Amino acid sequence: MSDNRRRGTVLIAVGLLCLAGVLVGGRVLFTKYFPPMEQFKKGFDPYMVVDPNRPGHYGLVPGFSFTLQGLIQDRTEQGRDLSLAHIREAATQLGYGPNDIVFSIDADGFKGPEIDRTHQHPRLLMLGDSCTFGSVFDRYSYPRVVEQELKHRGPEYEVVNGGVEGYSPFNVLAEMPKYLGLKPDLVTIYIGWNALYRQSLELGTDQKGLESPIKGLFRRANEGFHILVFGKRRYALWQFYKTRVPDRQAPELKILENYRPPVLDEVEKIATQFKTSGAKVALMTLPGIYLMDEEPTATALMKGHLPPYTNNPYVLAKVTERYNIGIRELAKKLDVQLIDLDLWGRTALAPRDATFFDSVHLYEEGQVKLGKFVAEQLFPSGASPGGN
Image (cartoon, rainbow, N blue to C red; front, side):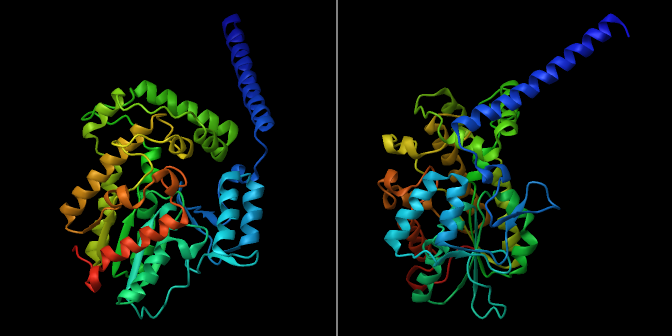
């Protein structure tokens, strides 16, 4: 072996040893300051199951149920202190006992009661992410509130909660055969947060991006390294606690002025497939804790979590604003109903820092308000939902 090859081999070996040292050392240091959380290693809640046939896809465990006591134990073992504090407080306020079931998953993998096989009543399928999955106290999730409201308004609808935590339109498209098989008469689509948080803001050749390809590559490499060292959930926790720096004059906001989130194309595919099947469709905009025309309070800055590509709440507000504009345009293009939660929420969900649990999720009181509003939009004064 030549001296150059021998030297190269030694350098590679040293490099691998250094990398191993960084990985091990990183885990040791992180574990020292953040207690071990087994759920972070697993990456999913116990009511979620990975789809072995579709990478990046998962669903809910059929037949799963949580008592209050079981839920508290699970959150304690995970070390999810913020969630645990809210669950304890809400359980007391809402009158739940230790052995009361807070939510369950039906035999088909939907949160809520079993589906009526006879399809006796018109069926409303409400698709979404964790915002639609809703409160762990299921009767306060907005799909259940909609169901109860419609019973009083008539006609009575069977409401299927199609929300799954972490879902993006990609996941919904993966489940379309299952959803279409339900033969829903009406479908609401309230989704987009996860796609907006995960997106790369290298916007393509026709739009100037927030990041150069090189900067984007380094950011994703850094994210990948930290996820490899600490795991997805621990990395998410780290991201949650990063400093927020509101800056309405940031140059990124000008770049985003005409931005159209690519995920809107997936939403269009979802809506089109349901419309083609004969179902009525309603698209919903996204209400969030941060707005472009509202300065975030200290509480909102403390609560709100941001995407990995920014520490400026106004960037998230602008990206959300552009998504909502796209949803409004899409509703017109497809001639489907629009339920503008963003516009409604600007007054109905105030003060925002007391209504939102974080950047995108509502406390139970807010979910009840949202459910009543959606029911009214679908059936104003007993009329049939408009749109298609």
